Image 1 (cartoon, rainbow, N blue to C red):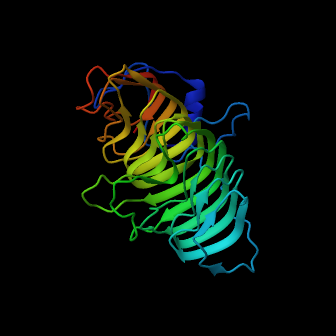
Image 2: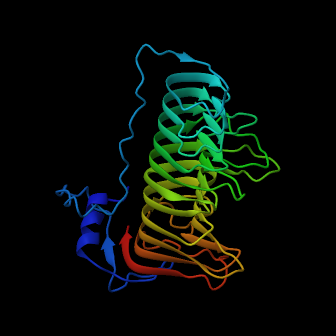
Image 3: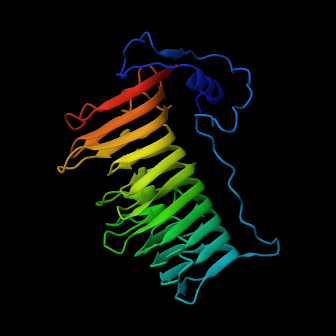
Length: 353
C-alpha cells in the first residue's frame, strides 16, 4: 500500500500534470512524495468523498453451525428442480456441483479445504454465489481450479464475499482450456448475462507448465457478459489477474503477481485500481484491426517494480488514459515492443519515491 492517507490528501488538494517516461526528471507540476516516516493519521474524508486509494474490504465469513463437520460430498448433478445448497464444510474432493438449468440457484455458506471447484454450471440464470471460503484449493482433472465456472446464460448473477487460496502443489493440469476463481465462459450467442462480483480475495491460481499456454486467471469474463468487479484483490495467477473481454467496470481492486495484471480486450472504463509487480506488464491492451480501442482508469496506483512496464499494446492500436497516476519517478510507462501508435495519456501524476 502506498501511503494511502497521504495520497488521499494530495489527490484532494493538489493537481499536477505530465506524461511520464522511465527515468525522466520531476516536472514543475509534479508532486514529489519522498520516503518519509509514517505520517500522522488524519481524519477520514467525508462519506460523500471516498478516499482515492485501494482499501481491502471486510469479507463476510460463511455462516455455518459449529456442529457441521467437514465431509466429502458429491459431485452432485443439478437440474431444474434444484434451487439451493449451503451451510456445508467440504474436503477432499474434486468437484461439488455440476449440471444446469437451475434458475435462481443459491450456493452459499461453504467452507472447503483441499477441494476442487465448487460449481460447474450451464444455463443458470439468476445464480447467486456468496460467503464461500476455500483454502488449499486443488485441481480437478476435468474441471480445473477455482470456485465457479459458468456458461450458456447467467441472467443476472451475483458473486460476493468470496475467498480462494489455491494449493501451489496442485495446479490445474496443463490443457487447452482456461480456468479462474470466477470464470464466465463461452463464445456462443447464449453465453450472455449481467453480473456483480463484490468483496473477494483470490490467490494462487496456476496451471502446470507444459505444451499449452498456462491459462489460469483470477477472474475471466467473455464478451457476452457485462457487469462490475469491485472491492477485492487477486494475487498470483499464471496468466492474467483479470482477463476482461466483456463490458466491465473495475473499482477498488488490487492485482499483483500474475503474468499481466489486467488483460483487456475491449473499450473499458475503470475507477480506482492498485497494481503491484507482474511478470510482463501491469496492463496489456489487446487491439484489433477493426480500429483503436481505449481504456480509461480514473486513479491508478502502481507500486511494484518500476522496471516492469505499466502498459503494453498488442495486436492493434490500444490507447490508455489515466486520470491520476501514482507511481515511482522511474516507472517505465510503455513497453518498448508495444504496438505502434498506441498512446498512454496521463492527466495528473504523483511521483512516490
